[in-house]
Image (cartoon, rainbow over all chains, first blue to last red; front, side, top):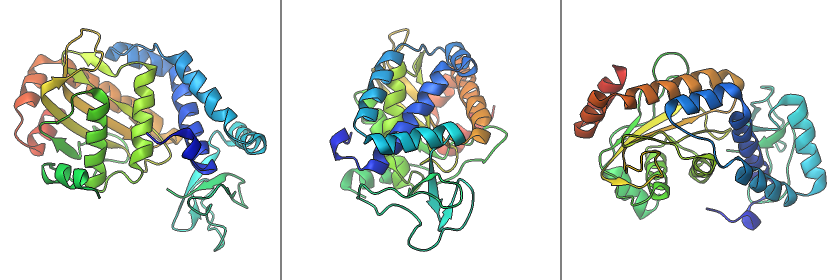
Length: 120
Length: 168
């Protein structure tokens, strides 16, 4: 797996969002019941929470605050960009503002909905 | 695609598919006999095959969410079956792969049996997909719980047969 230190800011935010989703599932009764009925036990919650904390601490405070704020507001802070369209609000993005440049630490947000844009 | 990806692709049956919602999810990929000797290798091998088939755009991220799910708790459910799964923004539509290991893969199963049958499920992270995702998981667990299904899956010769077994 890619070491944390080599991830760009956008990649870290994506990882954070994926971990948050998994943790939310792990704490949600319906999912836990389904897992248990299928024969799967949840035993590593604390380890995942530690991973989440380590990841969050590796993200700059301003960017983390932006992620948390959008996450609280929309439930999904990062959204993919496909064909020049923000898949959070489905507004066509102006050329040049369609996503963060790949391989850089810059992140960009959708001017319409404010979500962080991510090129898959 | 690296040489590993090409080697995997040469013995994989299937292409990109998957229903957007409702009804059982049709497996898009069948790997009849994995080389993997551990559950991590198995996940890596299946994701590489899915990428080679053009189904996974972000294989590193897909592998990561599957491995993180295993940290939460093993997805082996006993009787030689594992159902690794995960959701992410990088997955545009639900995706199911079926893989088999004839020698068996250690997977920390509750009954300590090695895993021979692997259903790998990936799904988008958006709310409308959550219900179908959980339904697919439940369905796969039910399929794997039946000894008749397991026997047929262990000897299934091709993707069409696997799909017929899953269709019930």
